[in-house]
Amino acid sequence: MGFILNERPDSHQLLFMLCVVFLCLTGGMIETAGACRALDPPTDAVDTLWVHLEGLCFTSDQRERAVKGIDVLEAVKTGKNLDFQGALVVDDVMFDQLPLQAVADLPDLPAAIQERLQQQGLAMVRVIPGSITIRDSQFEKNLATNLLNDVLVILGEVNIAGSTFLQSLDFSKILFAKPVVFTDVTVENEGFFIGVQFEGSVDFSHTNFGTHSRFHKAIFRAPVTFADVQFQGVAEFLEVEFQEAADFSRANFMSGTGFSGSVFRGPADFSGIKTEREVYFRFSEFKQQVSFRDAHIRNVLDFSNSSFEGEHNFSNAEFAVAPDFTASNISVDVSVSGRKPSQQSQWLLLGGLLMLVAIYLWVSKRKTPGHSA
Image 1 (spheres, rainbow, N blue to C red):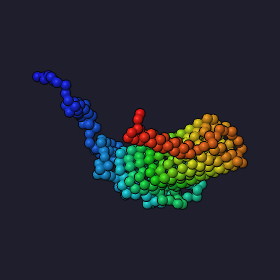
Image 2: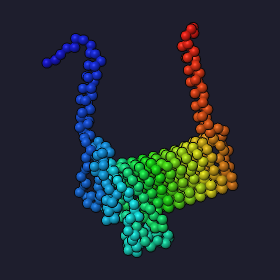
Image 3: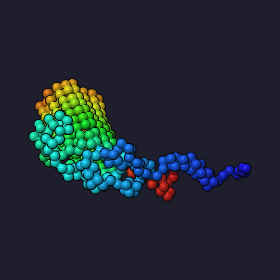
């Protein structure tokens, strides 16, 4: 059975036919994607707080299956691992509520960790023995250590890739015994890592830090990458020790930044970085090669009293003002644009406005009655 169109379909008929075809083509995909659902934990996850959401999950779906902060604390207190995917964590999570334990009563602590604690004169610590995996999830409130004088030791691997922190994130005074993955994370407010120690490699690539990020006196004992990171607010790396390679390539520093007093014992890569405000490397030490190749420096870059023991590469870097090497052991001849891009933007904006005004006056004149072309 068929039919013949004797006339060309009008626009309404054509739109209806296209909608039918679209629904036929996408119906299968929508059915395959399915509604939001919580997956059952695998059989070997008996010692894990497991929350995995799959499908088309909206905020309302996540809230129905939300994880409470107290549940997170209870899990790590009892030695469980955390494994979240697409979850929403509500309420604050404060790790200072974990109990202090005597180091002497923790014989399973790795020898290297015991040595670190002994060097700091710490006899009591807080411990999270398991791993933490929180991917593509969201923290609605604060996640913080709230520690001043003692240390939190996390013995398992940590993976927080793709997650978002709507409030403050404070990982200060944590000793991470194993590698940390912190890629594609969004920290909308403060991100504090004061006095943190990383025994394993760390990956912060493609992360977006918000109003203020602090790594004051942090220690990176293995390679670390901040490649393609966005620092929206003030970024503090004061007195940080990078014992191996430090990769800041293509990072974007949009506010004031300080690396003063930091030591780079391995190669340091700042190639392709962009800076909007002042960046300070005062009294910093570069023990191996350092690269600022292809950097775009739009404000002060201060290396006063810094030392360079390896090769330094400033090729193809663009500077709005000449970098300051006062009392440093090197002097680099670089080209200076002589005008900050922000000033250029202002002039371009003014020129554009004047052009629009001129066009408006010209058009108005042509529309004036009695005006002949």
